[in-house]
Length: 484
Ligand code: 5AD
Ligand code: SF4
Image 1: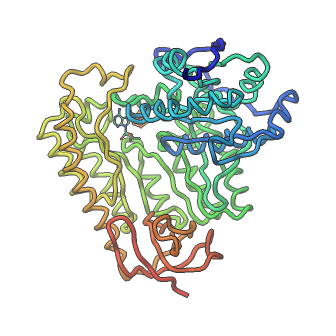
Image 2: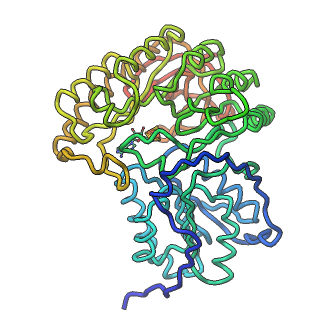
Image 3: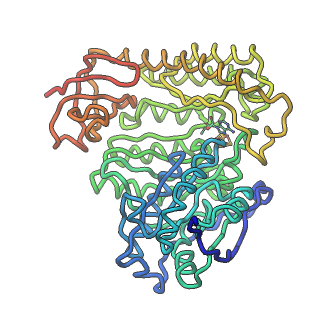
């Protein structure tokens, strides 16, 4: 007979509600300070953990917090599921296929958990913020012991303690606007490149997107905390920071007592002397000329911008609630190219949004040609329960959606190749990351314009900035030679 997991009861401290998550109350953001309670110290002595991360950079940065908290309790990181005493799935809810992948992973782990019932599996990130996920986990996935969301990472010690102590499963997901928790220890994945959260949440409510419900209200970290974090990174020898937020251009809009926006922050961070600054993600409506001017003024702000356009038909943009038109987008691109002529632009695009006609799709292709994107993430629209677009008529059939995606991808790939080709015979600065995954004898790294370069060189160059002459451009990467 197939071995089964013993049933354990669930303690639901708080269940998610997409309806509550939609509310945007006017009260001020709570600033909390992380502190590990004495009773949780040493909880992880002689125990191991592993974190599996899915989705955007926001989740990658959150995973560094999870790891920091686990090490604060004495746990040791491992990289094999079967060796871990606590296994986290930091999940993404942006599209249905991202969620299906997680359910597949959980199913695959069932036998591991049956053979090792003391192992703890925790599901966190964006998926648990949806009611349907929590219901499904409770009903069909007894292998999951702890469920928490995006707002309560700092409570991990409490959840582990509860699980060990009371031998029950814990669910706690907050569906409010969210706090800012400073002082969470970080275990960064890299010694040269760092993610730096500058704000959390999103108030845009694009009609297809689940993020404003899963990540709460837009709230900005105090600039002093961010500047201090980057100054510390400079002291530790970090070379690159990427500033993170769902809509970084809205940074500071929630400050009531001061006028200090994204352009101010970018300028203050450029002055810290960190060699490279990037940021993501931008919203075209909120990208202002001040920000573009600061980008142009400082050599350490990289000439690459990811500026998601999503669609380029004004009618669809309106239905998406993007609050700009194709013309407005192109105006910003034109200004960017005027002040930073060498800039590389990339974007996100969604095809087959409800009601998208062939003409609408042609508009998208037209803008892609005009904006000269050098890369893009392209997606088929995915219906997300709880979002307005999920109720729209005229959902597009999968066959048409696929055809549009393939057509769009072809054009995007041409842009990718063009973006690489323009660097042939040029000498570019590369931040060396390590050995190339496909060609192990070659080093790889990224240029200021965020182009991947492979070249021959010795191990001590890893983590350094070097000059490389580009000898050949391919669609997805550049081949170069080290310059003395
Ligand atoms: N379907 C398809 N793509 C989506 N995105 C967000 N929500 C959806 C959805 N429901 C895309 C957008 C966004 C990127 C992170 O994911 O392009 O910029
Ligand atoms: Fe989603 Fe729009 Fe917010 Fe981006 S700006 S996270 S697409 S709602």
